[in-house]
Image 1: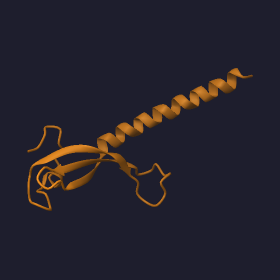
Image 2: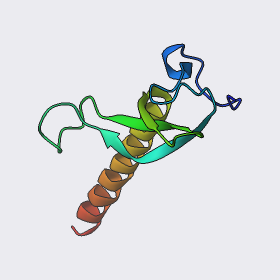
Image 3: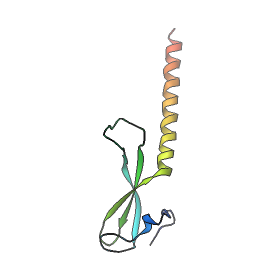
Image 4: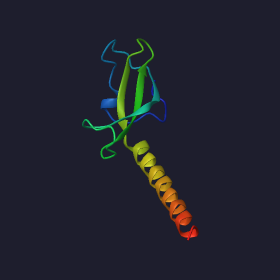
Length: 94
């Protein structure tokens, strides 16, 4: 069973490595992958999605490039707005 919003990547639709089932549920982890050792580095940060086997509950994780791009755009907008507000406060204080 593959939901319509499930990825079409062949590796992500393979059988469960634990029990061999092909019945999965897709979801998101409230986490992201950061390559390297520094948690403060935003470079290479990837949002993570998960596929849970409905038979044995095995959880496989995959990076989600679409969510990563969306997250990066949101962060850029928030940072830009914060900088504009900070600049406005400084200018208005003079």
